[in-house]
Amino acid sequence: MLKRENRIRSKKEFFEIKNKGRVLYSPLFGWLIYKENDDLKKFGFIVSKKISKKAVDRNRIRRVLSEIVRNNLDKFEKGTRLVFLTKQEILGKKMTEVKKEVEKFLK
Image 1 (cartoon, rainbow, N blue to C red):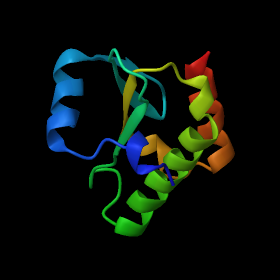
Image 2: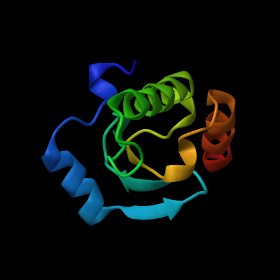
Image 3: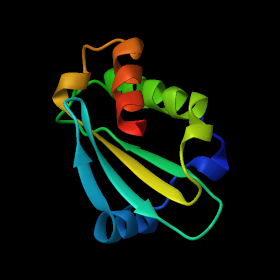
Image 4: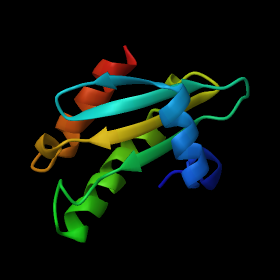
């Protein structure tokens, strides 16, 4: 699990990133990216009920993404605000497949 200082928790922060940031897409998810002028790296995960009606599935996706980000935290630039927008295709994927997609984005 990500440390509290690395998580986006308020709706205000999510809306700020949505309005000021830019969007990139991949086959498994989209990213909302915004750069701040500070040393914090913050991440958020949005998994809607359109992905799965089961909370177990949605929470698993959040945990997998959170763990991947936590392991690669040093690869992100300082001041990064990043929100993962998941797509339906992520539902049946294993952690290694999702990890490859995130690493592809980092390059």
